[in-house]
Amino acid sequence: MFTAITFSYASILRSTAQIKLPMIINTLARFINTFLNYLLIGGKMGFPALGISGAALATVIARILECLIMITILYKDKYVVAAMNISKTIQNLSFLPSLVWQALLLLWWGML
Image: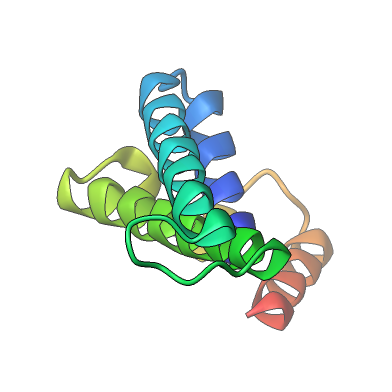
């Protein structure tokens, strides 16, 4: 779930020509994952040696941190992505016929 949220925000940012932020956050998450793998797989610096379970745990922790960092920066710095309201955007598309607009709105609310 956290990966899907992060990928969605990163894709939206990339499509609006803001490629540095997702790249920096993704690189930071990879470094965190690598460091946690080192600690948890082999049991370094007092951590227990968990093997494959340690790798999975390190990946989950890194993905959660990646998602939290992405959302925090987006909303703190008020990026355009954070200000988007999709249901109002769909309503403002006056060139769509009424039937199509209603179908889009039903689909949107059905996903929530």
